[in-house]
Image 1 (cartoon, rainbow, N blue to C red):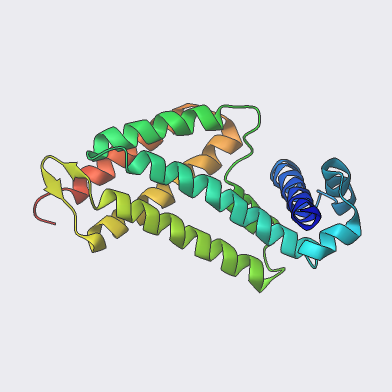
Image 2: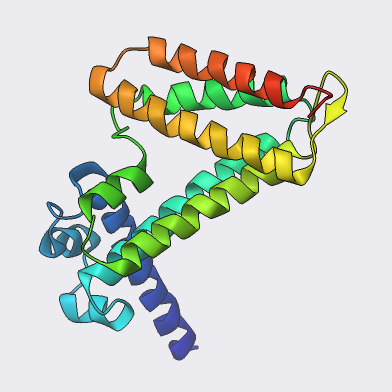
Length: 204
């Protein structure tokens, strides 16, 4: 019984550590967020951190994986709620607008982390690349079961559409973060529908 309680306690410390890293790495950036601050906010000693993570870099990888879980869960929840692409895209955009217009939104966590760690570690770039592919795969899976005008897309074409939507999303996020102009959010919804209309043509 004591051993089980100890294991639960250790798991709770790991959770607090990840939660603190999640907040600090996203809001302040990987380099500016100090390990001592993360540990202090988590209420965890440095030697305990090394029990779970060998370095700040390892904690960074765990952070970006945690972000991926959040984003992929949201994507899957919305994509598999709709059988029609237009309904899905409008629903996704409503959720996206609510998210980006909050004070706690600092841009795409994956693009931010990639830019902050560019050229520093192959581990980071490989992880980000893997997450982007998971995002494309998840979106492809959802789109391939959707209809638009009665048409269904093959997996290959659905993947191509998913890639273009991801490019559009990332581009709009950058423009919105630079200017904070809501017009880019409107462009995102309109252009996404326009791109999808092309892909759902019966001739494709």
